[in-house]
Image (cartoon, rainbow, N blue to C red):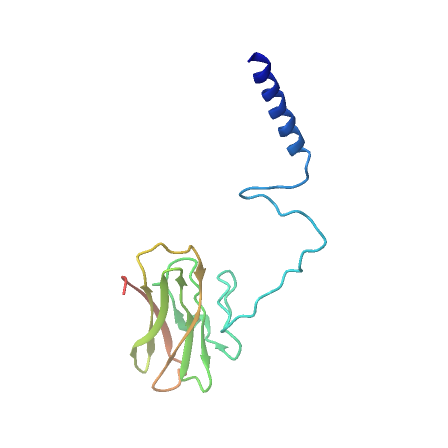
Length: 163
């Protein structure tokens, strides 16, 4: 009986040593084996306009930036893109919203007069979870009654619970 246990123990050690000698990583978080038959990585095409780079936000293609001195983004949290742009004749303004795994972003004009335009960016929670931990900054636009001209754009943020 003693020899059987010893033989099984030695066999297990030899099996473990043989497995360590293989150049293959298996398991959670392991790197895939380096082989030449791997396909090259590809970039998938986007289906809409690109999201903002929160570290360096710029208007999307075709947008004309509004001078920072005419943008009041003090109601937005740190890290939120605070760039505003116009499109066409200036009667469409845009800003970036914030969306994620269980949130959608939308925008609306809540006030417009001769001095300012208030654009509210609303983040709507669409599910109570589980949600992915992604964060996107989609471009949002609203139509004004008249071109922006020299008016100030005030950005506000609202959050709404699950639909």
